[in-house]
Length: 147
Image (cartoon, rainbow, N blue to C red):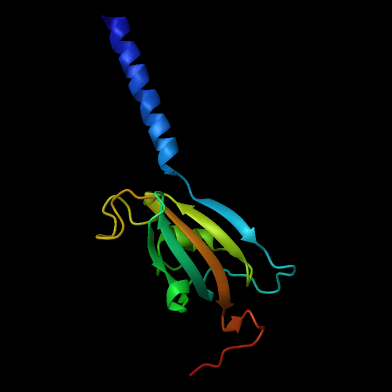
């Protein structure tokens, strides 16, 4: 009887591991560099005002948001909690014009509560990002004028 229970427990745990692996969930921030410019004259640091184009997806492939579609990158101060922790950490050191894929665990995203109705609780988030501005400097090399 004990051996049968242990065997069932073993198969249950293996099944959970296989499911977690299939679902694409991550437990730590994963950063993949998809494109890095030949030169990195401008880099994003904590406290910098950055502009980022992004596309957000769930692990099942469902898109939940995209600044590309709106042609309107998000602008915020990096490393100060204005965005989810996965972004504050995953965009540090990024070069102007660089493209990264961020796989963000729920603990660095929207947590167990999610962001209904588009992001369920406990969701791993996948973002394709492109840094298009740092402290007024843009991809064309020009400085944006302050209003």
